[in-house]
Length: 353
Image (tube, rainbow, N blue to C red; front, top):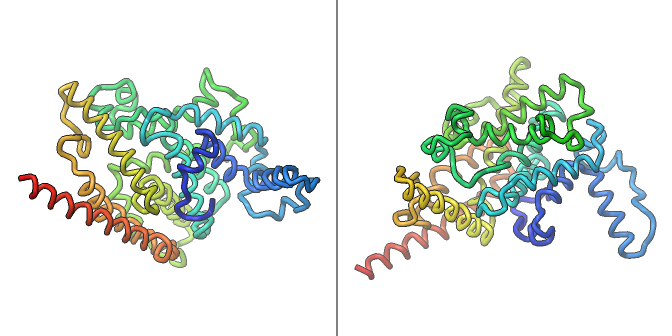
C-alpha cells in the first residue's frame, strides 16, 4: 500500500465492495493490521502461532497505541464511514475514498512526505481526512447544490458546500444527537488534541475544494524549502504542504497507470454527464464538462493533464523528489495517450463531414 498506483479496483473486488474498510484498517491501524495479517497467513498455512515480531518495533503509524483506539472501534468507524458513501455514484464512492487514502499514504510513507509533519497528530488528521473527505457525496457538485438551492447549500451558505457537509457528516456519525459513541476513534484523546485534530481534519478536507486549486498551488509553489522554515512558521507551513498532499491525491487519477487512469476518466465523466442531464431537465445552466453532447472526452482529459495535473505534480516534486522518477513518466504516458485520442477524434470528425 506504500506504492504509487496500486490497482484499487482490484482491491474493491477482493474485498467484496468494501475497499475503504480494508485499506483504512491496513493504514490507520498499522502495524496491528499487518500483524493480524501475518497471523492469519500463518494459521492458513498451518505454521501455527502468532507473530513473533515485537509490534512496537514494526513499521507503521502506531495510531492505535498513541491514541488508545481499540481495533474494533477503528474497524467499526471505517465500516460506518464506508456505508455512508453512495455506492451508486460512478465516481464519488468508497473506491475513490480508498484510492485517495492510499495515495496520500504513498506520498507520506512510500515517498517520505511524512517528514513534513510536525506531529503524529497531523499525520493522523490528514489520513482520517482522506478517508472521510467525500463521505455522503450526492454525485453532484457544489455548483449544482447552489443552483438548486439544496438544503446543504442553504445550511452552508454556498461556502465549500459539500466539503463542509462531508466533515460534518463524519463527526455527526460519532458526536451528533443520533451519533454512535462506539465509533468514536477520538474518544481517548486529550481534549486539546481532539479539538486540534478536528480543526486539522476540517481544514484539509475544505482544502479539497477545486475552486481553491490555483490559489493553493501558487501558495505551495512559493513556500520556502523545509531547511528555510522559520521556527514560528513551521506548523503553518507543514499543514499547507500536508493539505496539498491530500488535495493532489484527490485529483490524481490522470497520474495513475493505464488502464486504471482510463477507468477513472470514464467514471468521473459518467457522473458529470448524469449531473448535466439533470441540469438540462431542470432548465439550469449546464456545468463545465457536464454536457454529454458537447464535452470531448479526450480533449477534456488532455486539458486536465496539461493545466492541472502536470503543473501540480511539478510543484509537488519540489517537496517529494521521487515524483520525478515514479509519477511524471506516468503523466507523460497518459498525456501521449490522450493526445493520440484527440488527433483520432479530429480525423474522425473530418471524415464525417
